[in-house]
Image 1 (cartoon, one colour):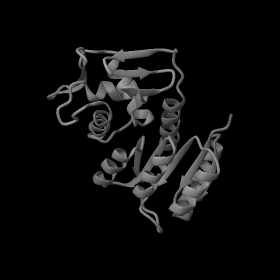
Image 2 (image 1 turned 180 degrees about the vertical axis):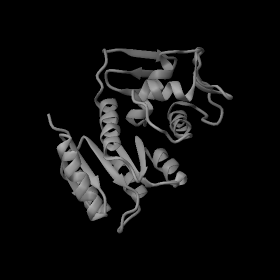
Image 3 (image 1 turned 135 degrees about the horizontal axis):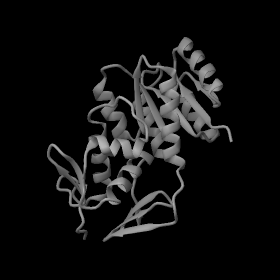
Length: 228
């Protein structure tokens, strides 16, 4: 099956180049130059991933990301201006799965797209792990707290699974990124921290005093063995 990509980019030259390059890489690409048009296309058809530029003429790309994530679980890869760390953090907090700063190599865009789509579609054995009130369902690819589905992106779910598979073991940011991405890329230093904060917001009773995903200073994170 050919994966369908929605490219949201208002720069016509860059958009034309990416449509051609992604098409040659085997993707079926639809293009929208406005945020409103992108949301309309998402309402009209299903896509395997969205490549979203944050600088759009009609609305903030972060608003597009917020509305997209409220309606769909489609993986989102943000395109950001180099050095815009705040936008990257906010985008990740809103539910984007990955980011790529401009300028970038088209090959890296393809690699990152395939990585986030693998995470989204990855099938695993029918297994539910229970940690007190928390359930991690790898078949359904969802976590549930007190039976209620937790709001996590595909990347955040995979991070939670990686931690939960090694309870009591401290995992560094580098190890977590390797386990979840499966690819070696230059990465935004604090992106893992942003995703962990979103996981805590979803599964902890008090995210500011976490009991499940614990920070080990200068070392990484650990999934606590003892659960309520």
